[in-house]
Image (cartoon, rainbow over all chains, first blue to last red; front, side, top):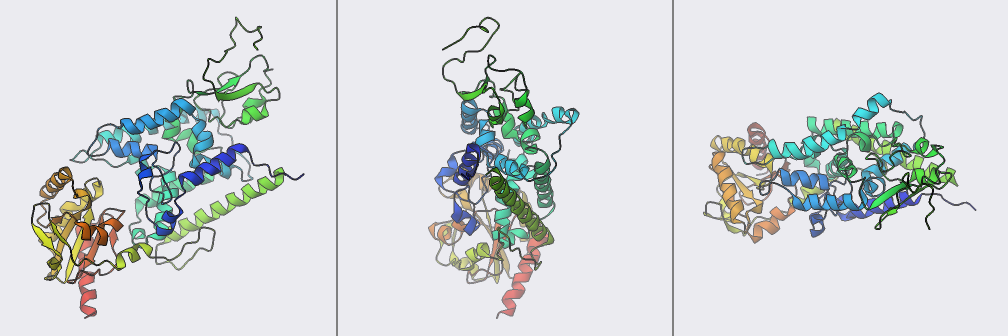
Length: 297
Length: 203
């Protein structure tokens, strides 16, 4: 029987993208949606200025409040992303982020795939923490005008999701806006095109090296409710999982590493079914030297 | 089975790439370029946003400025072109361009006038105070209005990008396209001069 094999994860990603960008009328009008649902932050990186966006981008909201006139610190936005982080960690990256989904799709385009050499890959992974710290947090707090207001620097200078979801649809529909195109737009467009092209050859380059939201959620991976687990009793050390992992996580050593986006490919690949994942509300039995040879029911 | 899903992803991916590259070419080459995309993301030469401002009727408003002066729609009568700058207290680029507009006001073309409307000062004393401070820091001598219900319905509710600047004639009807984004003093002066010409020609 000819079955169309689309993985469950892609279905969830598609549904998430459609829900978070569901306001079709916005695309037709070329106007940013300003309804009450905009008070809610979506978990993934989805630009507030996308005409179809029904919720707010957490990273954009954070910068807006930090750089705003009225407030110094956003407990509300921070609360939202901490909630997502504590519940899911980077599961959001793997399942609930539209921009991550885009990179997944681009990577499926048939091409020779480039492996980024370790010497570049390892230090570059720290860049996303610099992105979180500097343009998202510090600059909107300190680089302000005379009234204490600042631009959202990450949104303004770096974020490709904003260019793709907000800039392009709004420019298509607003002719006078097109007259304001200058250096900044060309710069952001260059970044977007670079990331799109890179995504074909490298898996999720934005998620690995640049995304501040991924950087934030990664801090929660070790202790989020959603956990990945390797059953050491079943694992035979074949490292098939590590070969399959496109985020280069050392799964047998540290499966809940900060780089893991919880996509579940290792789970599918493991010949022994040693990898499990889920929300563990009771304590997970961690296999230690003491209980290594005990069997649990 | 797997081949079919791979094909579909390949096609989606290819279309996305073509669409994006096409958009890049179209947008970077400028709005006057005759290239039209015929892809999935069809770009219509649609001026809906400016159409949004086409039927603006500013007659019948009666409101106050942030300094307490009463202003009604008769305000436009004495000038051939009035430049109306829409801004909000949260908008840094709006505040950044205020000194330029203030300078323009002191050296504006004959028969023209400038006012601004601070859209979020409605029922917000704190915003009114802040708007007053911004205006005095920018040395702006023109009026800044708090929109009333008529102005809100006719004009400011449509604005979702700031700063937006429109130009109206002595009857309060819009002349030419609205401007989005911060501009320099010279840009605005040229815009006023262009529209003065337009009004002259249409007489």
